Length: 171
Image (cartoon, rainbow, N blue to C red; front, side, top):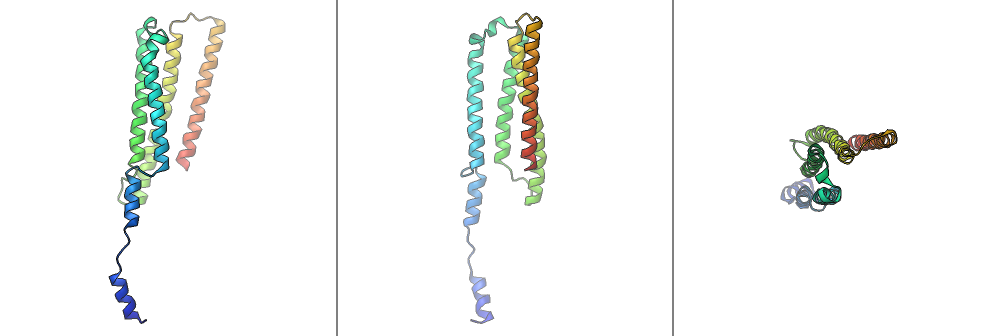
């Protein structure tokens, strides 16, 4: 075989399009295990939040709580649900630049912003949950210590979430 035969074979070679099919398959959200895990977590969270919001008024005496406590609780939970949905949509549409470096840079910036908002919404929702349950309780020294302990647990949870998000962003 000489060089001219090789050149002719090279020109007549048909490209294999399986890579484009596989890439299209991945970007549509099917076949990506990470997106499946996010979707499952989102479904579990949404169902649990919606179920809680459906029964909190009767099961946890929401009718006896002040209006501000009910509004804070419902509002914060709705913000967490909306934020989770936007996070899933952002994870589903990673490609947004002309090349991979630009796409990754844009995604990194979005991920940092999402992490901050995620930490804030989840911490605020826990604080609003505490406000809801404490709003109709008469506080004394012992209950104040228990409330301080719960606030400390919320702070520790926020710190752990911060560490998790830092590791995700680094990765």
